[in-house]
Length: 158
Image (cartoon, rainbow, N blue to C red; front, side, top):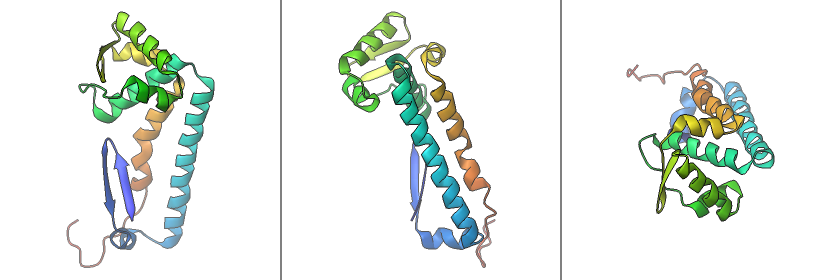
């Protein structure tokens, strides 16, 4: 089963549909190595971020990633408790930071949602890991685009 995720969407294809379109099993093995390598790189980057960056930077990064995934116009519907769990912070730390950003007019808070008012200010508060993850996401499809796909015989849909 092949699972394709991105931009808030995901779908799955049975392997019997996708494997005939791949050039060869050797190339499939190389694709798997590249995909696993990228996953490991993102995991290591996330671990580095959690271990070395301040709460403010990590919280800014999490909010920016939520905006990237769901759009700038939608409020972020993560609670302060969920954010604290996600970022391995005390809930009070998340609350204090969000309240400070509300006073700075960076965000608006409503029960159960956060609206970002000043994305540029939030980006300035984030760590460099946000840009690195954003670059990863921007190039993730390059992995799939690099495959010299074969059209199964009898398929005239190209």
